[in-house]
Image 1 (cartoon, rainbow, N blue to C red):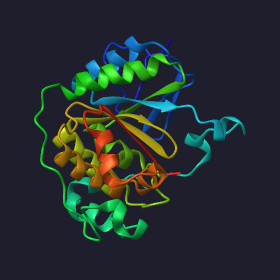
Image 2 (cartoon, rainbow, N blue to C red):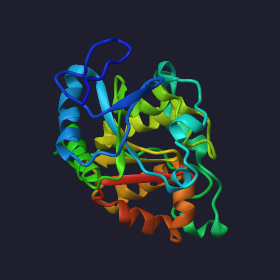
Image 3 (cartoon, rainbow, N blue to C red):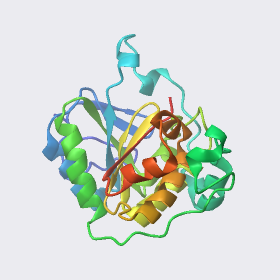
Length: 252
């Protein structure tokens, strides 16, 4: 077991972490973890350390070839300093694709992005929710532990220069800006990051059909692939989001 040293040369509070290494701005454990309490401890330490734990799920596509996407696939230039400049509503409107299925799948919307949903009433602490959900995922034993020095969990894609959305966009600062907005409005906190996928723990998911429909439109703009694979209408997609405390996205 080792104490991790980051660029600032300060250890991560009093935590002792498993063997791992630095890759640019990302520290990652050498092996998957199964200790749920370790993830919870890292979350609890974040307000003091500024280092957020993110799970790195196993990926059979790379494991079969003996590769590790962290080392063997490229990264975009880090863009954490650009996140503040992004207009989230305008960005999602730019990413909104024209209607498919002769437009019927997007009713009541059309070629115009409907705008972003209002902030949801919040009853749960986002970090506590993230710690609980992340620890459940960690206990499965199929994810490595990543730790990133970041002002907010939402900023991690921009801080790292993550290229997971490259099939849709290379605007990594915009990706983090959307995550920030969801973090603010829904308590949606990044807990898992793969090569082309991410997962958010959600403390205040939409609970009404009307709000869920607008959030579903945001999801479609953010990750068109997820909606395309859904095989249903936007209304059906929205129904599945009601009360859902784990949001998953995949851009493959």
